[in-house]
Image (cartoon, rainbow, N blue to C red; front, side, top):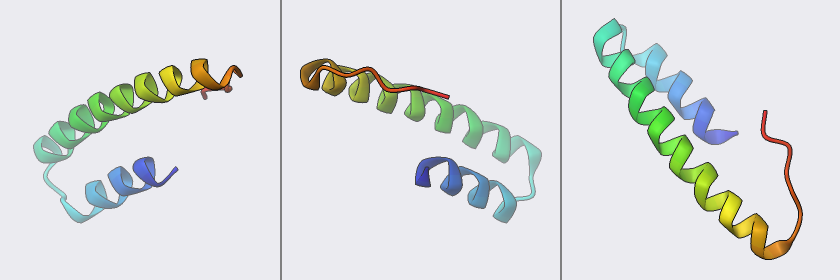
Length: 52
């Protein structure tokens, strides 16, 4: 997924572990929000995706 790819790319660009850690937390929060929205959309469509 491009969201995960962006997080990895940004983490490799910024070598500071503290900044990378903050980015990871923000990324996880955004991902959780995205999955929640996606899950709501899926319930409208009527199929259950496999979330890895």
